Length: 269
Picture 1 (tube, rainbow, N blue to C red):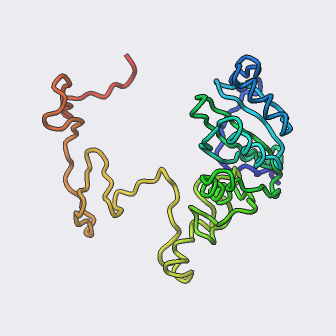
Picture 2 (cartoon, rainbow, N blue to C red; picture 1 turned 120 degrees about the vertical axis):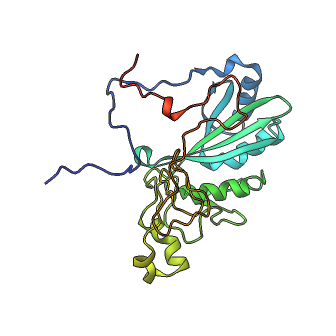
């Protein structure tokens, strides 16, 4: 019997890993090196517990407790002049830490500064919506739920925003296959035709690298072009088209490729 190996991450991985390799990290600076950020941290820490803070790539990063997200963002907006929330999303750390890292990307037009507010929640831990502070959280939090399964409470319309309401699982989790699972392969067939047509139509091809020359738009292969609308029901294709990498009236300083005069090198010079 083959040895069992955990499959909690089914996405493609590198076939080779150097066990002595240490992934580089961007340098982190002390908050005191920037006068504006130092003052922001001091004022914010008076009302909210800061678990950590540093400057990374000229941006202030602060870690807070999940239950303080509304309070922290309100202070940043009303007292510290961070008027805009640019992005809200999550990072999947389920396999390593058992939950998600949530971040709020803030921007101050007045001070020309950015701050990233981070927090961590367990996999099924609910997170309070910040829609009452920033209206942009409406769609951002719905997307976070749709893609990661993060449970947002007190949101005005918490439902999927990209995937269908009855879609199975959450596509941006690391456990979700890159080309979708079995449910994804049959979703449209079942919805449009019904399950009884599975054997007739076949599963959906979800390989993003797959190119079918004979699909609706007639994808072409250089030298074997199949123009749109060409009748290929008899299995015949147009005659070989001479290779040409430049159209008529192209760049004057570049020579045209003549297939009959080209040579394929067997080895590098």
